[in-house]
Amino acid sequence: MQGNGGCCGPNCYQQDHKIDEPIKVSQPGGLFTGRTTFKAVLVGSSNVGKTTLQHRIGGTPIDCVTSTIGAAFYQVTLRGAIYENEALKMNLWDTGGIEKFNEFNLSALYFRGADFIFLVFDLFDRKSFIDLPLWLENANRVDSARRIPPYTILIGNKTDLETKKRERLVTLDEAQTFALTRGLQYIETSAIRNENCEEIKELVMQHINKTIKKEKEKKENRAMEKEKEKEKEIEGSSSLDGQKKNK
Picture 1 (cartoon, one colour):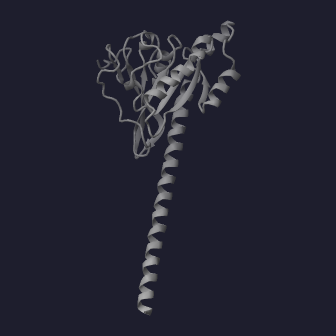
Picture 2 (spheres, one colour):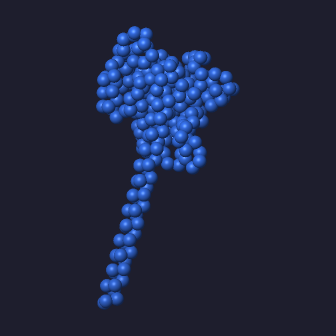
């Protein structure tokens, strides 16, 4: 049902059914140029803080965050990111706790068309870190046929527990190495304290801008190549005409 302005917020959509039932989502990912809406999905083990992160990134209160069964997404405006006078938006999906019942095998619909994957683990839960390859495998298996793979950001959450003198069970070096060897971006956050949550959106905007720039450059290069081919054809045609006249 559509949010009514309560905790869920006006841009939140929740469904208390299976995630693979028909849900209207953004168009499947592809070229970034010309698009104003992008899809991001939160992935990771239970209780790593995905739903709280979703609220922080979406700018909604966390005082009423509860576990739900079924997919939920917020439409987040990416401030400062504009295409033809229209602000860019990101539909940020959360599993809604469904991974508790179908671990490492989320529905294809959840990942389909995702431009970004936020892979979350708990810095104080070793198993949530060990399980990360299984979540990546799930995402890659579902969307292996994509022409453009989703940009994945690895998020180590719950840095606030360090102030409570809890011992980290995943070191910074371990997390950075995991990200580096797989070509992922890495960031550490505290969803409870809202630390570095805005930086996630900054990374998204940077990637969008970088990708659009590359797409424009490729388009311009293709246009130049076609123009050169056309000029060669004209030169070849002119040369043949000259040979005929000489005969």
